Image (cartoon, rainbow, N blue to C red; front, top):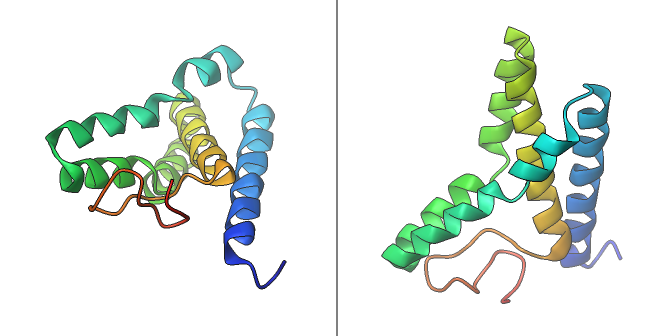
Length: 118
């Protein structure tokens, strides 16, 4: 298995999802909020209406861990529980996507991802 990067990336997504869910539970955030916001990052797919390049940029911006991690750090530093909840939901979504095999998009086509061709 250690020589199968795609499997490792799926497992990594599962680990990210598990840790984010554990942290979410630990901060006693609303599970209703979780359910309402979990799929919000997928709204970035609307960017593909402007073409594959714009769509890939929008999708990748919403599906890279950089922004939610920065939001989470800022929220924790400022003791802003709602922003921390949103960051954890966002990271959970990204982990779930990676677990399922949805990767970051290349500007060639929606189905071209860094994990596989869908």
